[in-house]
Length: 382
Image 1 (spheres, one colour):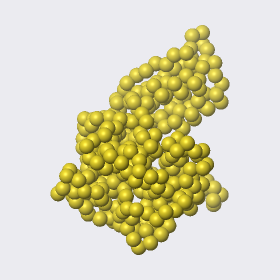
Image 2 (cartoon, helix red, strand yellow; image 1 turned 45 degrees about the vertical axis):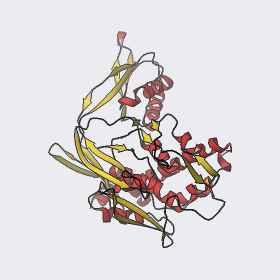
Image 3 (tube, rainbow, N blue to C red; image 1 turned 90 degrees about the horizontal axis):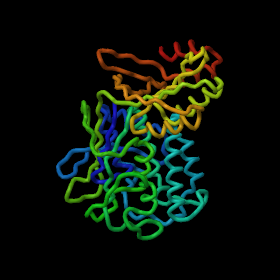
Image 4 (cartoon, rainbow, N blue to C red; image 1 turned 180 degrees about the vertical axis):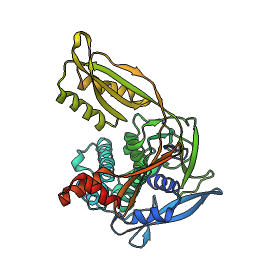
């Protein structure tokens, strides 16, 4: 399953999360999971919403009994430092992956604020972004994306609006300096709508998760459409749509023969490929001319990332040349679910259905109980 964000009316954190939750059938269950994450003083409420006659979803963030409204004036405060935000995130009931996502997004925001205001990252204080509703938007978006487990995420060019926006530092042009910093290298455009349509939170979430910003691709098989409604009202519908689609996916295979690296060095290179997010990386033993033992080093990645991974292969191996292939593949639809605290990977399609316990959960139980990984998997599968 792949996702495509359509940002014709910009992108805000609450709209992204609302569009994502709209893809799920059992929205009550998903909202219950969001409320179980432990966001302080916060209750998440799912609401049916409407913009220009179009039905959509809106996740309301209720803090201390009062709903937080985007762009509403806040009482002056000194904001929160990055360290304080990080401590808050680590106190939540998040999986390792979602925690890492939220921490990385805030680190990205801190670097953008640092560049925009000429301060060291450690001196940055989040004002609007330090509010609990912004934290909720980022955590919800990360949780829902990992819950959906898409194979690929694309996004349209982003409409940023026009005019000015008032924030803690004063009145700023649209896009605000931090937002503009986050949008570097991303396709965006200004429109005649006199409002901030793309917020720093929305820009950071998209920059972190999206692999490619591109006009709408051809959908082989459109599955669902999620619609997130904003709170502002304009002549046109203030919505963000996310399309869930599937089909054959073209990928790139990079391969090279290596006969002058040790096994440890080749294994390290493969680890760097996986850490960078390749689809797969593997090493096969081969024989080269005159019977020399060697390795076939192979990386599978998305087409849009082929040059980046080629650079990584050159950096971490001794090869002087890389062969490039463009195979197509068929994949099963995948989903990560949770039952009684155990993460379950499910896959289905082409008349096949299977599921298995997430290995990290089994590993954690095996270490905790000092049992074998096989016994741990058997326990969790029950």
